Image (cartoon, rainbow, N blue to C red; front, side, top):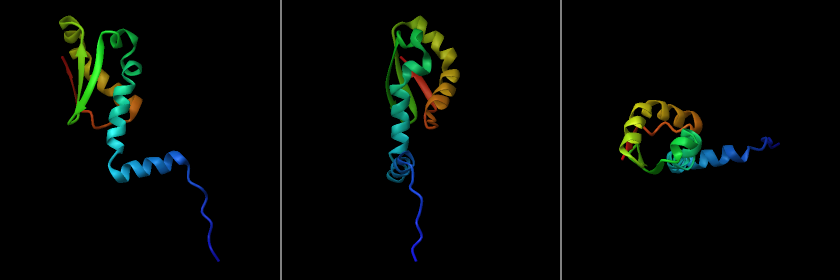
Length: 97
């Protein structure tokens, strides 16, 4: 007599597959880049471009030095918001340039 398992949800299957293959971290980091406007809001997203992530560091191009100075003070808040919005825990720092 065989036992029947209830079907798994597709998001669970995809999540497990991504984790097994090592892509889960990359997907979460990409999500942080793609959701930049939602994470920081429209005012900051108008003066910034979320460029790339390398070794847990998010690189963000800023339109002016005064804005760069302002965003340095908001760095910890932005990192917390990234974790909240995306669940990404591998981004440890932000470089504004």
